[in-house]
Amino acid sequence: MGRILLTGGAGYIGSHVVKALGERDYDVLVYDNLSTGHEWAVLFGDLIVGDLADKKALEEVFKRYQIDAVMHFAAHIVVPESLENPLKYYTNNVIATLNLLNIMQTYGVKNFVFSSTAAVYGIPDKIPVKERSLLKPINPYGHSKAMVERILQDLSRSSDFRYVALRYFNVAGADPAKRIGEGKEDASHLITTAVRTALGKYPCLNVYGGDYPTADGTCIRDYIHVEDLASAHLLSMQYLIDNNPSQVFNCGYKRGFSVLEVLESVKEISGVDFPVIMCDRRKGDPPALIADSQKIKTVLNWQPKYDDLDFIIQPAWRWEQERVKKPAKKVNIKKVFP
Image (tube, rainbow, N blue to C red; front, side, top):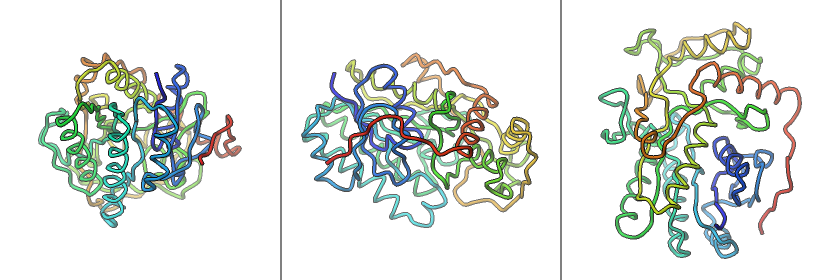
């Protein structure tokens, strides 16, 4: 088969999917503007530095390479920022995706794996949430992803284009071999922030909201190890290459942990009792998000291996310690285009 193109493949999740593909000898091509991604994170294949807003550069990629499938990770993902600057999110997450889809149509590339989010559900009426649940996002980030899902649905109905949309729940963890992990300096994910606080990067950790209708008053989330999420992407890509119809899948473990439960685990693993400050709620945060992941297990035979909170946190902790000791190094020669 031809190459697999990963937009945003130098970022946190994309780079773990690149690793999973490369370890299985797929021909990988990464297209990333490096705004939040890193060259050192691309362990396999070639890296083209470019932006999805640059239609000419993007089209040149499709001219030069035989691409059989696209995995689309490039997006802005911070909920509070999306509330402050919604146009940034609609421009990057929706319009840039349209640029990509139009060029895919021009060059006859039919297979598309989309990085979506549980934020499309907003505040679900029922937990755990199923794929057929009503989409009612409560922030511009969630709206931007839901818009793209609708575009994909319409495009799939009107042509032979096929997609899998993977609705991520809370992704965490790192490569157990400590080669890659979260590299974004201002990452907002709870587990990353907590382990960095334990290492002294921050003086304390703020918890936003202690009055939610949960057992301890803090938000509950379904945390999924990034390695299990990567395996879901590979199964989704093969599913499309085997000419199966478009699908939407939740990616989670069907159980959740509160913010305080996560912090307790981080403190135990790190051995650091860092300060925690209770703050007011943030806008756009639902009280609980837990995935019903039975569909992906049934249709794709997805079998997660790392469904354990401590195991999710441990490699993240080791990765952050490694980052403190020495800067990450380039692992192989990259090809920068043009």
